[in-house]
Image (cartoon, rainbow, N blue to C red; front, side, top):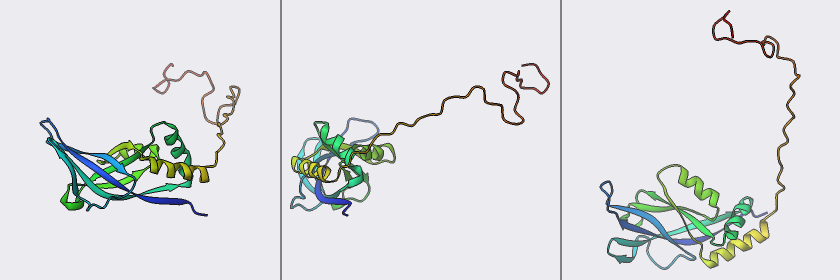
Length: 179
């Protein structure tokens, strides 16, 4: 049985000028394109004062049938998102960042944001991608029953373990001292 499917999506990032004594600019994911355009990765897409937008290339968006519950919640949110991670390093066209990962699972995007120096952002999911994700969920989602763990009731009259002081016995920090 096929357990995953993938499509290629294009990633656009933005370099913004900052008014900060610690950094003069930062990089952010800006958009996910439903299909990879006919552009060379690293190409300048748009420019305005203080902002430059670059096409970083295509990434594989892979869906796994075990994660359909996460995809389903994302689609039901009303504003489905794709989570994109940018990594500082040698990028396309000599850029200092590269598009590293993309996911439709919000929990996976959150996990990426919690560790490392990657820049992670949730971007609006293109309608064509949302339809593909919804179709995948419809074909592979299996509702899993929720099990609440049942705790054993507390037993107060249980005897103390061997060598332990009887319940209620005074305890002190010093040997032979009063509790």
